[in-house]
Amino acid sequence: MKRKIAIACDHAGFEYKEILKKYLEENFEVQDFGTFSTDSVDYPDFVHPAATSVENGENELGILICGSGNGVQITANKHQKIRCALCWMPEIAVLARQHNDANMISIPARFIAKEVAIEIANKFLSTNFEGGRHQNRVDKIAFC
Image (cartoon, rainbow, N blue to C red; front, side, top):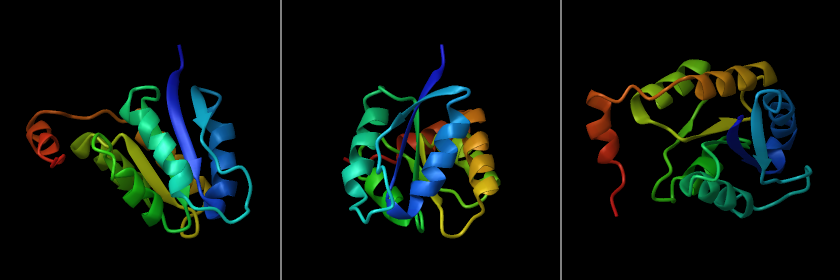
């Protein structure tokens, strides 16, 4: 059975979302929360449903894409059970999983090459949380 992955973007991330989705569908069941074109949109309209799907276990992990990666990351992290990391290089994605148990990442489409975005997604999806000394820290992240 394929692992389930949520993906969402704004208009600036649409091209990268389509590339990542096509690439990931070979090995994962990808649920696309939109947007579905380069028309200007409000990213929270797509990020909140994607984050909710990870939060409630419908999807195991999630990938978000926008111009800077910041807006989608900030929005996702408003969800109590989401730990979304802004990743601009593969090593950040590895550490986000290993040390922070990140369950979503955001990718800054305007600042990295498409090939780097694919590598980031690969590292994120193939790295496990180390637990151990990191578990206590992760347990302290949620405040409410």
